[in-house]
Image 1 (cartoon, helix red, strand yellow):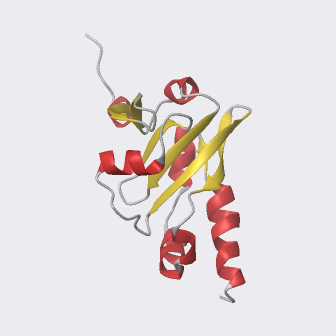
Image 2 (image 1 turned 30 degrees about the horizontal axis):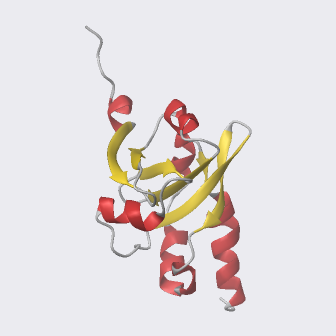
Length: 143
Protein backbone atom coordinates (compact mmCIF):
# COMPACT_ATOMS: atom_id res chain seq x y z
CA UNK A 1 0.00 0.00 0.00
CA UNK A 2 1.32 3.44 -0.99
CA UNK A 3 1.79 6.12 1.67
CA UNK A 4 0.13 9.48 1.12
CA UNK A 5 2.46 12.41 1.75
CA UNK A 6 1.54 15.65 3.52
CA UNK A 7 2.16 17.48 0.25
CA UNK A 8 -0.51 15.39 -1.48
CA UNK A 9 -2.98 16.32 1.24
CA UNK A 10 -2.21 20.03 0.91
CA UNK A 11 -2.64 19.99 -2.86
CA UNK A 12 -6.23 19.02 -3.49
CA UNK A 13 -9.54 19.50 -5.19
CA UNK A 14 -11.62 21.55 -2.78
CA UNK A 15 -15.20 21.77 -3.98
CA UNK A 16 -17.51 22.71 -6.84
CA UNK A 17 -19.67 25.81 -7.09
CA UNK A 18 -22.09 27.35 -9.62
CA UNK A 19 -20.49 29.85 -11.99
CA UNK A 20 -21.88 32.86 -13.81
CA UNK A 21 -23.59 30.86 -16.54
CA UNK A 22 -24.80 28.14 -14.16
CA UNK A 23 -21.84 25.90 -14.92
CA UNK A 24 -20.42 23.62 -12.28
CA UNK A 25 -16.96 25.04 -11.50
CA UNK A 26 -14.21 22.98 -9.84
CA UNK A 27 -12.37 24.95 -7.15
CA UNK A 28 -8.87 23.82 -6.16
CA UNK A 29 -6.85 24.67 -3.08
CA UNK A 30 -3.06 24.57 -3.51
CA UNK A 31 -3.35 22.71 -6.82
CA UNK A 32 -0.72 20.50 -8.37
CA UNK A 33 0.93 21.73 -11.56
CA UNK A 34 -1.14 19.21 -13.51
CA UNK A 35 -4.41 20.50 -12.02
CA UNK A 36 -3.35 24.07 -12.78
CA UNK A 37 -2.53 23.18 -16.39
CA UNK A 38 -5.96 21.56 -16.80
CA UNK A 39 -7.71 24.82 -15.88
CA UNK A 40 -6.72 26.58 -19.11
CA UNK A 41 -4.61 29.60 -20.03
CA UNK A 42 -6.12 31.96 -17.45
CA UNK A 43 -7.12 31.34 -13.85
CA UNK A 44 -8.69 33.37 -11.09
CA UNK A 45 -7.36 33.00 -7.61
CA UNK A 46 -7.66 34.08 -4.00
CA UNK A 47 -4.36 33.76 -2.16
CA UNK A 48 -4.44 33.66 1.65
CA UNK A 49 -1.06 34.28 3.31
CA UNK A 50 -2.35 33.51 6.80
CA UNK A 51 -3.58 30.02 5.85
CA UNK A 52 -0.91 29.51 3.13
CA UNK A 53 -3.66 28.54 0.70
CA UNK A 54 -4.39 29.58 -2.84
CA UNK A 55 -7.86 28.86 -4.19
CA UNK A 56 -7.89 28.59 -7.99
CA UNK A 57 -10.51 28.09 -10.72
CA UNK A 58 -10.87 28.63 -14.48
CA UNK A 59 -11.10 32.36 -15.21
CA UNK A 60 -13.61 31.91 -18.02
CA UNK A 61 -16.40 30.25 -16.06
CA UNK A 62 -16.78 32.10 -12.75
CA UNK A 63 -16.08 35.42 -11.06
CA UNK A 64 -14.41 36.13 -7.72
CA UNK A 65 -17.69 36.95 -5.99
CA UNK A 66 -19.06 33.47 -6.71
CA UNK A 67 -15.96 31.72 -5.39
CA UNK A 68 -15.78 34.08 -2.39
CA UNK A 69 -19.33 33.17 -1.37
CA UNK A 70 -18.46 29.47 -1.62
CA UNK A 71 -15.39 30.04 0.57
CA UNK A 72 -17.32 32.16 3.09
CA UNK A 73 -15.33 35.32 2.30
CA UNK A 74 -17.40 38.49 2.66
CA UNK A 75 -14.54 41.04 2.66
CA UNK A 76 -10.93 40.54 1.64
CA UNK A 77 -8.53 40.77 4.57
CA UNK A 78 -5.01 42.31 4.38
CA UNK A 79 -3.57 38.82 4.02
CA UNK A 80 -5.81 37.85 1.06
CA UNK A 81 -5.14 38.78 -2.56
CA UNK A 82 -7.72 38.13 -5.28
CA UNK A 83 -6.49 38.20 -8.84
CA UNK A 84 -6.21 36.75 -12.31
CA UNK A 85 -3.15 34.97 -13.67
CA UNK A 86 -2.36 34.09 -17.28
CA UNK A 87 -0.12 31.36 -18.58
CA UNK A 88 3.31 32.52 -19.72
CA UNK A 89 5.53 29.63 -20.69
CA UNK A 90 5.52 27.02 -17.95
CA UNK A 91 4.09 29.26 -15.23
CA UNK A 92 1.14 31.53 -14.53
CA UNK A 93 1.81 35.22 -13.91
CA UNK A 94 -0.57 37.53 -12.07
CA UNK A 95 -1.85 39.83 -14.79
CA UNK A 96 -4.66 41.58 -12.99
CA UNK A 97 -5.50 42.51 -9.45
CA UNK A 98 -9.22 42.42 -8.67
CA UNK A 99 -10.31 46.02 -8.34
CA UNK A 100 -11.79 47.32 -5.12
CA UNK A 101 -9.41 47.07 -2.17
CA UNK A 102 -6.48 48.86 -3.83
CA UNK A 103 -7.87 52.17 -2.58
CA UNK A 104 -7.54 51.11 1.07
CA UNK A 105 -4.05 51.99 2.37
CA UNK A 106 -4.35 49.72 5.43
CA UNK A 107 -5.26 46.78 3.20
CA UNK A 108 -2.28 47.41 0.92
CA UNK A 109 0.13 47.84 3.85
CA UNK A 110 -1.12 44.55 5.31
CA UNK A 111 -0.64 42.74 2.00
CA UNK A 112 2.88 44.12 1.64
CA UNK A 113 3.82 42.88 5.12
CA UNK A 114 2.96 39.27 4.16
CA UNK A 115 5.32 36.69 2.73
CA UNK A 116 3.88 35.62 -0.63
CA UNK A 117 6.86 33.55 -1.82
CA UNK A 118 5.07 30.26 -1.01
CA UNK A 119 2.58 30.91 -3.84
CA UNK A 120 5.26 30.24 -6.48
CA UNK A 121 5.34 26.61 -5.33
CA UNK A 122 1.85 26.30 -6.77
CA UNK A 123 2.83 27.77 -10.15
CA UNK A 124 1.57 31.35 -9.68
CA UNK A 125 3.90 34.37 -9.77
CA UNK A 126 2.38 37.20 -7.68
CA UNK A 127 5.31 39.60 -8.18
CA UNK A 128 3.42 41.85 -10.60
CA UNK A 129 0.95 42.53 -7.77
CA UNK A 130 3.10 42.50 -4.60
CA UNK A 131 6.36 43.90 -6.02
CA UNK A 132 5.02 46.31 -8.63
CA UNK A 133 1.32 47.20 -8.45
CA UNK A 134 0.55 47.56 -4.72
CA UNK A 135 3.80 49.43 -3.87
CA UNK A 136 3.06 51.71 -6.82
CA UNK A 137 -0.34 52.53 -5.36
CA UNK A 138 1.29 53.56 -2.07
CA UNK A 139 3.90 55.64 -3.88
CA UNK A 140 1.14 57.61 -5.61
CA UNK A 141 -0.21 58.51 -2.15
CA UNK A 142 3.22 59.79 -1.14
CA UNK A 143 4.06 57.04 1.38
